[in-house]
Length: 541
Image 1: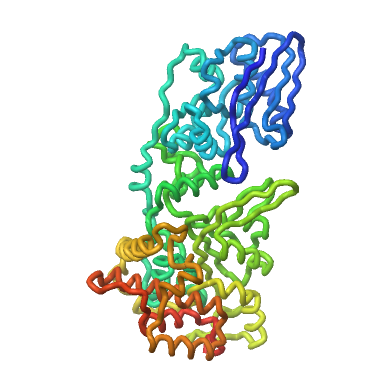
Image 2 (image 1 turned 90 degrees about the vertical axis):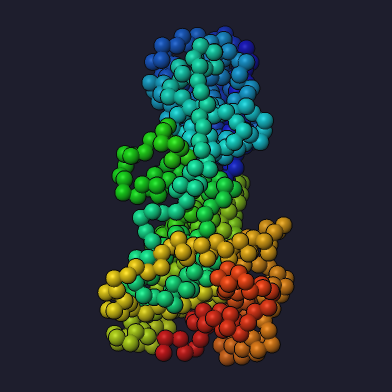
């Protein structure tokens, strides 16, 4: 008897439907074709044990199984349940009437229980796009797949439950997740706030501008000035994620196997292990990335881990998609690792090629970097003399290439916090107030770029810069003088104008009664020029 069951496998952050053809004839043999990897080939032993332990009769048959498309490599244990149901249906122990309506996936333990697998969200989206009624999968993955509207998602604990559902002897209810509630309730971290930052008004202003326009930013200053503290609070002032952003980001974490742990740590940062959250309850808390990612890799990270590779797998630049990639102690990173950032910073995506497979991962992130100005950390500090020689300072700064610095829109120096600032009893401005200004500025940009694939000022094309960033006559003179004095590149010229455009948007958000035009004033342009500090020959003096 020939039976077809359906599953899917992830390719990049998307999924491809896999048809599992099972042909059972008299005899006793097992043949599996269609480019299965070792984990898929070993499924026969897991399936056999799961069937026997579950008390299901296993007739002796010769099974020939083809996994189509045959030229696509099938990886992982997620095909266990698909293969098991196909074999049982081929021996008429499972009714075949529902098999064409559902994608089936899940790893089988030897006792028949279903274990969670990776990539369920892309597979659920593939089920919807290809006209399937729904998905059958392990209970621990049900909430993740259920964020996709328009399909039925059934999560089961063991093989016998799946068989009972398909045979109509065990009713089941589809899993539902209130996506709107997740987005509105858990959109921002609850344990950190900009109100905890003392002083540093100039740097706070620079960070607000960066958040409002999606600009990259680097902070240079002595140890203990608060660079890392402020960087970690940037997600609290970024606009809330939209549903499309949340789904795209969640797909990346789903295929990389980091979804459950990441969401749990963000919703309940004080929890340890799996305590406090379960995936089959708690209103789907482990189902969707609703807070903007904040990735902070150590400076010993390799090139492959940073941009992606291996099977291939998404790297840190993709895990930071729609969020923040924070590189602390930037000068300590390997130069080769920093140089691979240039493509995703410019293009918003990264292409990973391995043998015959080439995968494109999204990588649109806000780069936030922090570093000391010299090896001892005190160059330019009025309170602590620098002990480094000019040659040592030059070698230290030269670890970061000019082309990479060119791609960082905002470069600002940060001084140590004074005693009076530390002792002030009143809290600083809270994240909610800053976020509201950022939101209004982003709303202006959304309206400006409506109908295009541009979402913020940092993404503007050169033609858009010429259209929307027009300095007035006096501002034009200041920009010309700065270009000649500091020897700025063409890329720096564009980025100064983009930052000035964001400053103008923030001014308009703060003073809605003033008309918004494409003209940039001298004040706005001078602020933007001020944020190109590393381009100055006298920097640090």
